[in-house]
Length: 118
Image (cartoon, rainbow, N blue to C red; front, side, top):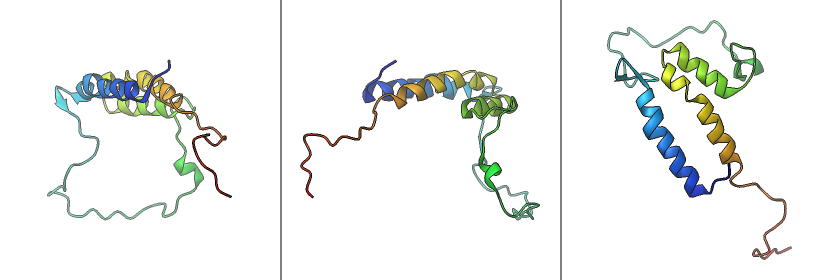
């Protein structure tokens, strides 16, 4: 699939507004991915960390199947949160990401329209 930037923008807008937003609901209510405000019932937000420093493995994406595909990991995360309709859209996100990578391929050559000064 080959897109122009305008086609990609239109496709992604439609994917987000028409499919992802409606799918990101639980029981008909939008699902918040993170707290949108302070919890008045929380006595403190301070947490004593069991592991105060991080290493390389902490930054790697791992899926339940043992792979490292971020789209699969995102689908698994959404499934674990009860957002199965949203998880089903993960392959469409992967296809859109692949198509977006093909829009502009960087070239090592300097454009003939650029005056190079040495």
